Image 1: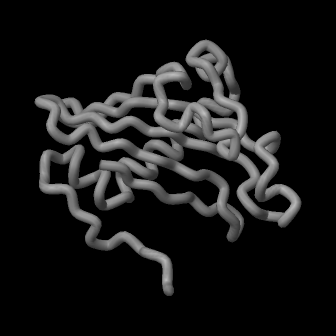
Image 2: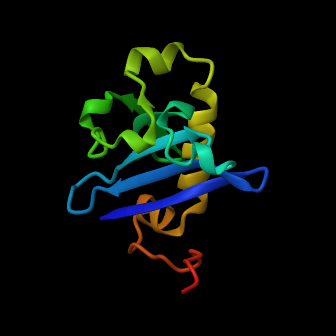
Length: 135
């Protein structure tokens, strides 16, 4: 099951995320592909992947919190999606000053996306409270 969304900053999309809920596995985990950068503050940047970087991570719950592991981008289902920007390898990410920002986005998703949060808490996946697009 896949959940996706975006995080706004300064009234514009700042990060886009795709989260694979690993349903059917004995141990719950989620696979997060997070792209951070300019997502439409100008029309010229919307299709320009050079203004974005992305990272692939896995989050697993523990007894009182969860742990995030940075993984290799080739493991992501979105590896061949140039619109996300330039992928960061695990080594690049761990040495990057932007790692804290990626973790902050992952934290926000885990604690605020109802589907992700309900799944990691061992509950039935729920989208209650998600804001959808108006038709």
